[in-house]
Every structure is written in C-alpha cells, then in structure tokens.
Length: 323
Image 1 (cartoon, rainbow, N blue to C red):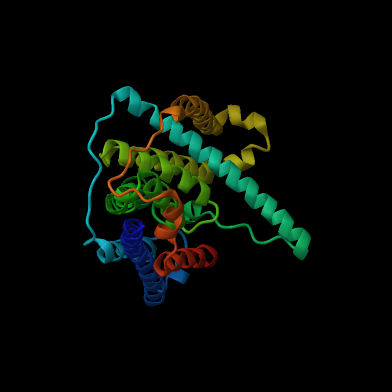
Image 2: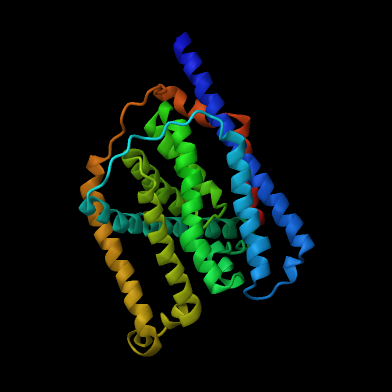
C-alpha cells in the first residue's frame, strides 16, 4: 500500500508539472496574442497578411509552446525502445488516420448540430455556428506561409511537444494512460469545438505509433499527410466554391469542378480503405507493461486530478469559447 501511495504521488508530481507547463503555454499564448494584437493593431488587418501571420500566429503559438516546454523539460525522460516499421505496415496507417479523422469529425459535427437544436428549443434561438479555425487561418495568412505552417512547421512542432516531450516523461507510469492523456491534451491544445474529437482520435494514433516504434518520424509523417489533405481540401473549398457546387450536382463533373470532384472521391476511397485496415488492425493493438505501471483505479486521479491539469483544461475552454 505504501509503495502504491508513493508511486501515485510520484506520477501525480510528473503529470502535474506537465500540466503546469501546458497551463503556462496557454497563458503565454493569451498574453502574446492580446499584447501583440494591440501593439500591431491586428484587428484592422484585412485579408491575408504577413503581419498577422507573424504576430497573430507564429510568435504567440510557437513562443507559447517553447515556454510550456521549459517548465517541465527537467523531468526525467525515457524514450520508447526504437523499432522500425516495415513499408507495408506504415502504408496502412495513412488511410487509417483518414478514416479516424473523418469519422470523428462527422460524429463531432452531428453532436454540435444536436446541441444547437437542443439549445434552440430551450432558449428560442440557435447559438452562433462555431468558427472553423483552419478556414479562418487560411483566410488571414498568405498561402505560402499558410502551407509552411500547416503542413511542415505545425506537425513537427506539435509532435515534438505533444508526443515526444510528454510521452517520454509519462509512459513509465503506463503506456495506455500516456497515450490517452496525450491524445486528450492534443485535443485541448487546438482549443476548437469543431476540431476536438478528430484531433483526439488522431492523437491516439500518433501517440500509439510513437510508443510502439520509438521513432518520431512516423507520427510526423502521418501528421504531415493529414494536414496536407486538410490544407488541399480547405483551399479547394475556398477557391472552387465546392459547397455551392453541391447544390447543382451536374457542375461537379465538368469544368473547373472536375479537380475538386476527383479530390473528394480520393478522400472517400481513403476513408473506405482506412475503415478496412482499421478493422483488420484493431486486434493487434496492445500495450506493454510499464516500468512503474499505476494500478487502474489510480490512473485518472494521478494524471488529471491536480490544480495544474485543471488549469490547463479551464484555459483551454476559455480559449475555445473566446477565440
């Protein structure tokens, strides 16, 4: 009993320090966003702007990640044992991530729709539709910078922080706990109602792949793949007017919408292939016993029941609903 109490206390200290780093990250992001927004008058920026990209996105987001990491970087770090994937094993993963992303996104949108209908029946008026942060960013940042941030810099920075930095410090208390915790952290990290479920689902895959292989290049590659598809889909939606075109189905199969149609058919094929690979692979998911595995009944309490983790969740909610 004393050993369990000591182990839980040790795990809680580690998770609490990680939570403190995450809370500091959000606080720094808020301060930088407000301060730089006022200094550089970002509210007055219209259309894609390098000024908004630098002071409204790059410095607040990536500066806050660095600040958060500095809080817990001195915690003991034990990377997973490295194991290479065979080409065939890896090539099944991108369609699986597509399936997980779009299935979770569909479920999330359905839940938002039902919540909106419920609020409308209770309050007599529907709430404002939540803004999609991806589309908002695409409309505010020049295309080349947007591509670099979304497809290159973002995936690398987020995998270094949300996977390597946190998993290396928490997996000794249980691989399953570390995978689930970092996936939820990843979902809150994006502070977006519309993105929460699918970022959590992707976070589960990225974290599991990292824990099983010990190689960050695999989740980075999967992250880049998913963000590239999201980037292309967003650009096609914004530039080709695909949402309007769905009102006249015939237009989708001719003229300037042919490319758009082909791309969305590709996404459908990836979804179906991912579903098949997911069903075939799910039975192979396993977690190795950790060096200092926490008993089941203590896992949630030790990882999430601390003031620092609560602060991270509350700050995430604040950023989600205040933009």
